[in-house]
Image (cartoon, rainbow, N blue to C red; front, top):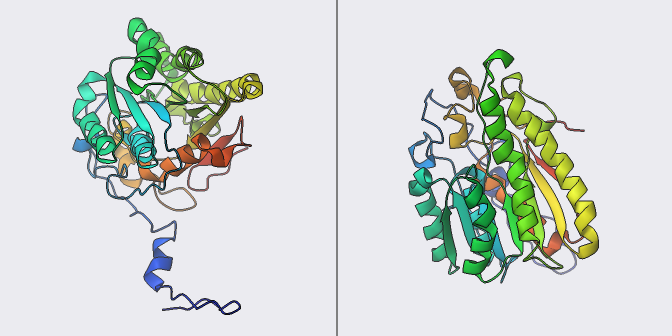
Length: 312
């Protein structure tokens, strides 16, 4: 056990060595050695081995978002699920959008939101469906009683080893879900948002260091960075902030549903300076910060949360 230096007459507070170790980013979560596995797209978190940590037992809120109303797309699993749970535990009512086949994952998140004493709204549907996409924000706002946070997080990631294998259909779907939906949903959200509202977009380290197997996905992430900065300039004078989070290798079901080569899974995330993959719950504080008043002078920023990989 170590004891910090006393200042003035304040009593020294003992700090357990185990507490210090717990804050070591290398060991705060285990270094995963993931077994080769596959699920059909889109896959389920609850069937992933190991199950990603979305904060069910590890996130504690302190009321940073009390009274806020949030819509999180892709809120059933992975980063979106961790954000939805964190927002609820910070005091927000939360609607989550997700594919109907992801209901088993969504049920866990909806239950966690309600257990936090907040309103939980389930909005299953497919962002490739124009009618669903066009009505999603209005439905969320109506059922939440307003909307002042939009998290554009839903994404499609599917590997293609060669450009000749990358079909126009896949490129179209990836762009529609990853970036085009952000135009639709952000435009619709503005009808409900006023000063103090926020939009947070999910981009990726792939925007800076594109994997050649993810040409379409990486291209959308670069577009999201640009969209974020431009929209932030447009909406800043209205008191609405727009920012993004760029995760690195975060362990989610996306990687076992053909988002990563199966043979690469055992060493997933090990090449980062921290030496391991991240967990979805480790992304949640970045989204909380960007949605809260604590980031009132942050606009048009891309917050990189990637385990230390250098970015421009």
